Amino acid sequence: MSHQYSMLEIMNAALLAQGQEEVVVENDGSLEFQTLTRNWPGIVESELEDGNYYFTKKQAKLITRKDGVFGYDDGFLIPSDALHVRRLWLEDPICGRVEVPWVQDGAYVYLNSPDGCVIEYVDAPGQDLWSANFTRGVQKKLEAVISRAIKEEYGDAAVLEQEAETYFQRARTNSSKARSAQPPYKKGPIALARRGRRG
Image (tube, rainbow, N blue to C red):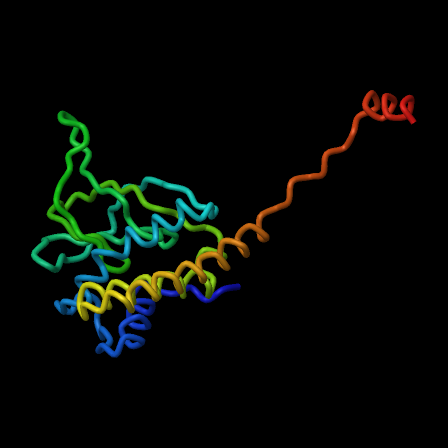
């Protein structure tokens, strides 16, 4: 069974590899954390979609509330199998879906709605999605973001992007091997009889 890496662990690995200070607590207000959290969903989801991994999109109504942070009044626990939240809305009996401002930080989403919300999230049931290669690929992508956006080292960022692709390719190969193979095609009695007549 693979280690289940957290978003913060992967971000800190990227920061340390680039000679930056690690983030001790989520959303510490640093430019580094804000930059990486803005880029995290795009990196992870685009790789999942392009890499043909096994994943699904699910919806869930969130009701487990805690006090909000980051200027929001309410926080809600997301399901433990959520890789990241793609969309969030409120269900209004008259208006239907109502889009509202929100932010995800670790295992919670924050918004202004004490009665909960509905989310669409990427579900990653397969352990291979958090394999070491997949994780290293995400880390290298985040390192490229740091090099490009914070350090302005564009050549290094391009090298890191290529390294990320190498790790993702390994993860894709392992993911493909982990899936059940298609049962081999078996000829029926008619096909076997035809072949027998030709021989």
